[in-house]
Length: 434
Image (cartoon, one colour):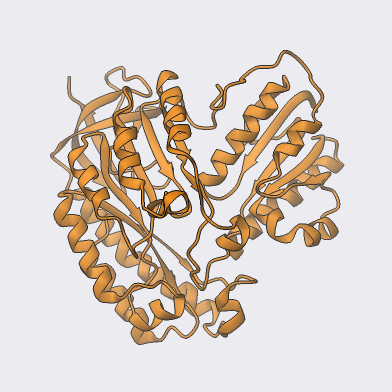
């Protein structure tokens, strides 16, 4: 076991990653060394930042905690600290079920853990943004708000995070300027509900002027937007995306379903016709945009016809990027309290597989359509004989990548023009153009 080191393991979404970075900087100020998502934890403290969104994510977090418990029994690690959404929701149950954990903290009280640490060396990283990040030096996640005021029937996020609380624009811009001064070129702007930014400040949606202001910070070359909501979508944001060259032509907007009956039961406050109209309007106002969405199969009462309607919708909309998940009944949600989870798990999973099979064909055709084009690519890393990068149409970790033959020396975090000369499954192959 290594003394004076904190290992942090982050489960779930990029918003959790931002919380882990916040904790890391607090720990760093105590003089501790840090390692994020270690393959073999060995620190004096191992912190698990958990996810509590759906059953699969909860089980993944629990499995990680149990694995660490076994390592602790063998003396491989020191104390186990659990924080995040899972412990926010199930604190009492976890304390009883997994007593090997030394301390549990919720999603918002985890800084108290840093307060318990003994100073082990000179304080460092004293700025709000600090010098430690879990991401590579060239990109970062910026969380602009916490919480959500939507009340979708299936979603437990509002019960975990509470109501939306937008960060002041000045604080966000100060953070962005600090990141730019550290060499960050690409920002992933994240929130539980990005398009509601500002409503809790003065009753207006302020996401468009915020993104416009961020785009004017020198050094920031790509800005990518995640987790928009379709209802009351601020159309002025599309004007910013079209006019500002460093705002990526990429939007992550979750539609969940297309059947009017299912959308009403989900309490999405959006209809099939509104969905199709919004997609058409987005593509009209921002030519060439890539849309990422999330869809759900197996919501209570979903019929075969309604699922087939969802399949047809995917074929029609042709989302360039798409994720999907099977419905998971979550305690405390409107759906859990008012609907019967009547779709067998095997049916949910079969529908999910069929939905993703349709999307796989669309995604492969999308990537094939880029072959022959020369595109701007940022290099993330090298793997053997290949440099691995992304276009503006791909977010880290979740979207297709570009593999560039390493017959020229390319630098991580730098942009290059790459001619796409092939594709395979979801990835593109290309050659840097001098």
